[in-house]
View 1 (cartoon, rainbow, N blue to C red):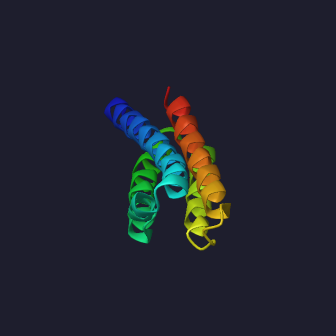
View 2: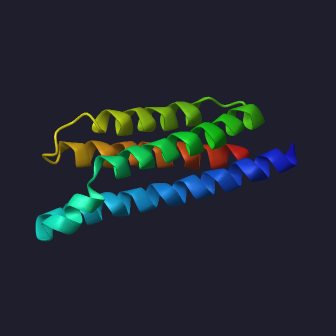
Length: 122
């Protein structure tokens, strides 16, 4: 059981780090789109967002799901799932700034879910 808690905590730390990278990506894309249209187009490509969401969903399912099994609390998984849902919904929004805001809110909720999961494991 202790090994499961350590693995879950490691996945949560990895997921929090990736959430931070996602946030940096979103902010860098906004800056690059405003200054360099060609580089911003590459970072703003749909495939980058879809792949990032896929990775977030996989890590979320693994670490948050393991956390529920290990400590039994559903709140971290619910908060993280809400964040993933907001991130997924952001893909449907127009590229007028609302997508960026929704994605950043979703990333923040997902990171909070992972943090709550890590705290419940302690």
